[in-house]
Amino acid sequence: MSLSNREYVGRALDALAVGLEPYIAAVLSEVAPGVAWTKIIQHKDENAGRTAQTYAPTDLSLQLRIMTESMGSLGYPFNLPHEARSHTSELRQARNRWAHNESFDDADTFRALDTAGRLAKVIGLTGTHSELTALLTEYQNRSSRNQEQPEEDQQALPAAVGQFDISEESQPGEPSIPEPASAPHVVVEVTTADALSYAMAHNGFRFVRQVKITNVGTEIRGAVVQIEASAQSGRISGDFQQYVDLAAGQTITLDDLNVPVQAATMYELADRQMGKVLVTVQSAGADATAMELGRAEADLTLLPAQLWIAGRGLVSYEFLAAYVQPHHPSIARLMSEAADILMQTTGSGSFDGYLEDRPDRVRHRPGHERPRHPLQHATRQLGLGGPAGTHADAGP
Figure 1 (cartoon, one colour):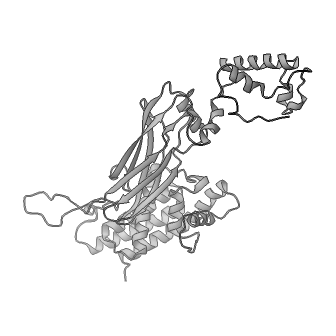
Figure 2 (spheres, one colour; figure 1 turned 90 degrees about the horizontal axis):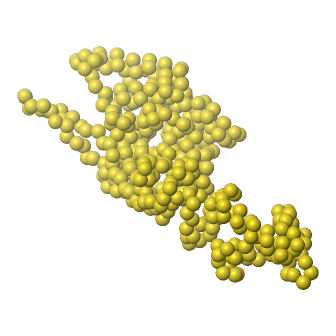
């Protein structure tokens, strides 16, 4: 008795899981040596408040998750090419359908087997690729015997979200027109910081505070969230994407997203300008088949390298040190003024005692008050500092 379509899909998914297990273990052993990779994804789930479950290294759903999702401080451990990311997204959908006992028509089955083999080939799983190729050939031969139409006339439709259903009936002489299925649609909201500066980029500041996605359509699996930031001259951020599953009517919130911006790029900004943050949500699939499901934009003030704005809280003051350029003319003037203050009060303009973090060793003349923080005094004399008492005094 021949296998059913669903049984063929199950065999393909099992074969892929067996091949992926040593591949994933090898990649994660370099990123997190000595830690079982299932513990990494388990820790992520526990932090997200998900219920406990079994974490097996041959569980394909876990394998595809760790290959496509951000793992906290590890980021995205798998540097997959775009083609491989598309395949993993499709396979996440196929695996979820199979796990929920959904049926597979011939086109869906062909697509699942073919995509599994393509993923194995892209990431270098030679043995798994050969096994899946043989399974696909077996399925094609079985299908050709069971169907009247030739094998070459069979078309495998992509299983990506948002594809069109082809009408089975058409009037003679009239072309069949694709009727859109119940199209998925999402509402996207994005919240960002007020501004982004060179110092913030240098310190890895996460300027995309929150992205909220509400699915107002049908269920979506393997949707791709992409974020980019741009200045007037063009894009300033690196690639960022995250895969999400959305049930019908579900709202998910992504917080403090790590969108990469090179500090060198921000350093080149010559003036203050208004930038943009663009968030798009697309269906899974290759570039030709992906469909945009929703988008949102937010303004973001971009600051030139030499501009610092004191904001609310301490974080802006923590970034202030990143603006101190050792060879800037203002620094030489400040040091000279401080040396004069030391000369007047100690008879020496040397900073040796301060450099050793021992102000008590700085000499002072009898009848003169021991100088405390000559740089602070010099800053005030030059009109660069705030009123007295705004900086804490320390030392004897």
